[in-house]
Length: 87
Image (cartoon, rainbow, N blue to C red; front, top):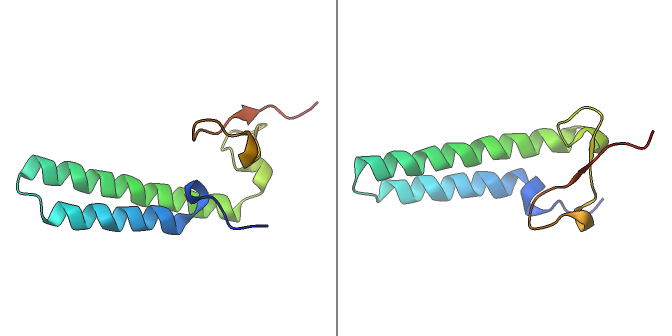
């Protein structure tokens, strides 16, 4: 299988988390820094989820039992479209 898209690449999300933490270091306001660190934590969670998706069966990657994620060529606007399996 080819290289995963950035949405499925844990390194992409971990890198974004690192960047967000670096930006937070230079923020002056406490609230802005808190928000940026929250964004970093969200990116970290996305990285974990992407890592788990790589370990699972592609038919179960959607996270919804009985549904499968469509191939990347069927994605629209950066969002996955889910299909029910053929019965």
